[in-house]
Length: 193
Ligand SMILES: Cc1cc2nc3c(=O)[nH]c(=O)nc-3n(C[C@H](O)[C@H](O)[C@H](O)COP(=O)(O)O)c2cc1C
Image (cartoon, rainbow, N blue to C red; front, side, top):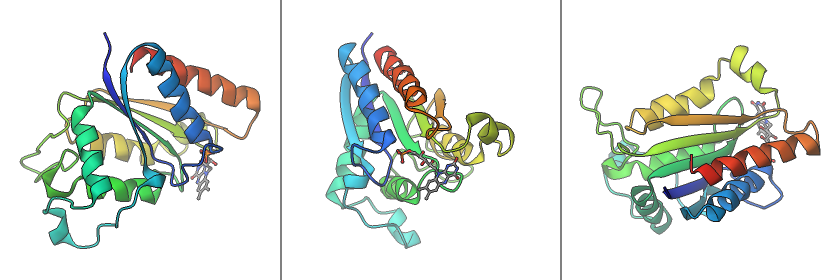
């Protein structure tokens, strides 16, 4: 079964030499070969302001890049976010992008505590996270907090399910290790998961 997949490269630097760009490409390559329908967003190449005022959160975003991203998210059945761990969590620009996307009650906005909107219901997601430390350290010493906040506090609260995670740790270790990560991610793309 083929799927409609949106790949979001959440690295603030979208140049191809970043490992996240390589992983996004590997996922797209695998998914393309398997016949999945694909759209792509590079957060680092978009033009959007950061949200600063509460009142703007309740108004629909007027910025063209954000409106286009909202359409792509609505279109997709499966959302794939690729990003580096920066200070234990997703880079600020990716969080800023999601805050803008959530304006006007769109998808990620979980609504009031008593009445979640679940705007991403029916969609699944995967987080592909690169990091300098080994993944066991991130899981066991740091409890995976920054990524769990993304998974549970944003995606699952908005109704996305299931949300899978793939960690690419110790990315500076060796070219062989990075190649193994690329192969793993390409296989995920083939399966559309
Ligand atoms: C500003 C910054 C903060 C970082 N914080 C962390 C961190 O908290 N934990 C960690 O394991 N690696 C950290 N790193 C290393 C990055 O996660 C790593 O360089 C990145 O995942 C490599 O992917 P890239 O080539 O796509 O940038 C940090 C790197 C930068 C530039």
